[in-house]
Image 1 (cartoon, helix red, strand yellow):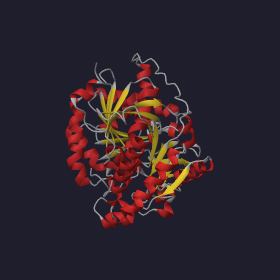
Image 2 (cartoon, one colour; image 1 turned 180 degrees about the vertical axis):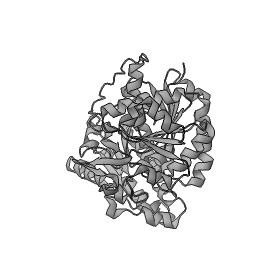
Image 3 (tube, one colour; image 1 turned 135 degrees about the horizontal axis):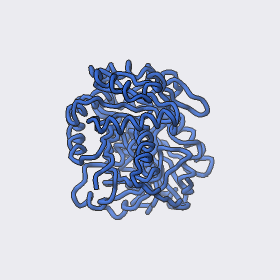
Image 4 (cartoon, one colour; image 1 turned 60 degrees about the horizontal axis):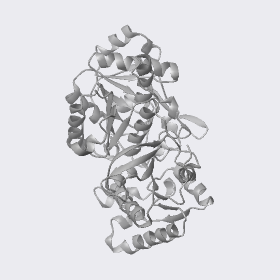
Length: 439
């Protein structure tokens, strides 16, 4: 059966966000951590969507020209109806890191030189685009992205411009043209714009505009535009069109797995959202252990890592849940120092936390765990010997951060329930709810 969609996620939490969005509209989906072997792919022969989790959000254009080329060629070989390069709904990127324009250029080389639709707005995630400008919610308010309390001061890719075409034009020479929300309702108007464009940025403000964009994505796909860039707003928009076209997608059912005695959380996130979640979890009995991330580069400081690991194992042995974190809010971020001392210093945090979490899972016999931080999750999961994820439980109260089931050739990790949470994602009770297995 032909795949409805294939996608590459520019980080792991964004990749699980898409898997959740697809599964919620009845599209069985598997997310691979690396291109699978034939044996691994055969386990998921009945899926209608395949994802590939990547790390390009935290990589350079030079890295992308090598690794994205290979990933896109593999995705192209799947011959899906649409292939999606998934970016964060906050669109944070720069010419030097996470360059979305480079991905656009590579995608056009491989999937054809037809206009590339770009869809960033996703009201389900409280992200909105209006006349080309991006807005995002934080707590109970919605901000223009360049005034957002978190994204305007992101430690690697701060968003200084809410005009997404102006922002993206610093990353590519491609001609990007806006399709604002009134225009998206007119096929003739969209076709006129597309005739002189290499990429089309679509506004999404609400359900009505999202529905119009979904219809345009399917129509443009039939005209040859089978490569799309955007947030999980792409899937939410397509869901409206798929529903209209009656793709015979019965709803998938998910049963809450219930509570477990204890979980382990590793966090490389510097977001204040994650800091609040950690503090709330501590108030509910979690043991909080601070780890200086410089231990992952300084072999002379390994004793500190051994001490924290043992403290975590001791707490788990007593039936307590633990959180090991390398930062507690943006003021404690040491990532820049690590990046200055080693070429991939920031990545060392994710890799080190992944190795630590795998050790805790094996030695404590854990069946549920959490990784916090988008970049952290991407690099951590690759260290854990997990080759694929499927959706265990969607979390409608905090969309984009579902509980997943891990698939691994390692019996200690196969079947592990794991949640991967981006820095800005989730409410204050997120960690406690994962412990309790609540939707």
